[in-house]
Length: 123
Image (tube, rainbow, N blue to C red; front, side, top):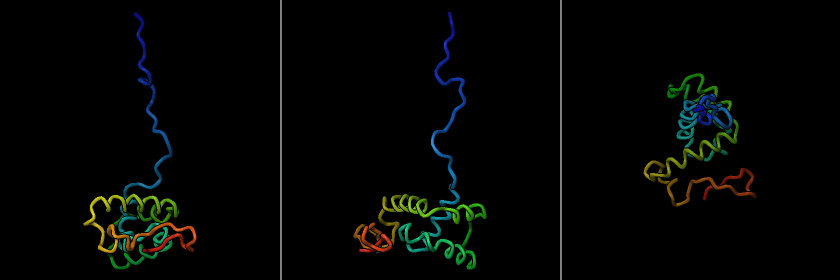
């Protein structure tokens, strides 16, 4: 009797999609900056990431590696927005984690508005 190969049995496994550029350490560094920035949206956080990192390093509160810092500073605005959005969703699963002004009452949460200059507003 002839042996049949199971489909894909002897083929090397390949992961589909793009390679991951920013690891877990870079996301943890972004989370530190996001918390220091008062839980603002990614669009408002992105321009001040370098300043927050410099201030946290100066004060001795920056506990992340040089590699994570380099990755964080290399992130594009779109990546920061996506990752902050994911962090916000994790925090909103339990309302106790966000400060009172960011809970489900709508204040302090960044909403996208087309006519706004920055694209964000607080209601």
